[in-house]
Amino acid sequence: MLSDEEHRIMQAAQNGTTMALAEELGISHTRLMQRLNHMIDRQDVLAAYPTLTYRLRRITRRG
Image 1 (cartoon, rainbow, N blue to C red):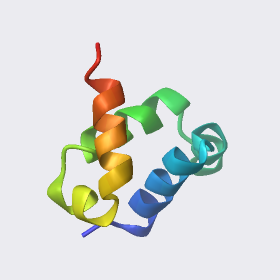
Image 2 (tube, rainbow, N blue to C red):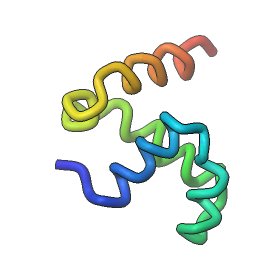
Image 3 (cartoon, rainbow, N blue to C red):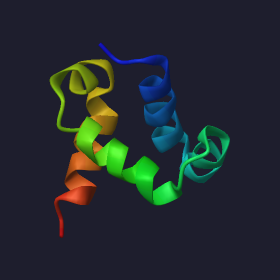
């Protein structure tokens, strides 16, 4: 189950507002993106945000 903060991270990723959210949470943008990258491997995140999760996985796995 996703926490409120995790929902906010996913919504920020969807809206393109991760920089603003990182500042609001008092963490670096790099740290926020690290959390997001770990989150997209979880089944509960996939269940809650399937389209966004698949898109983010595709983008991050191009490497």
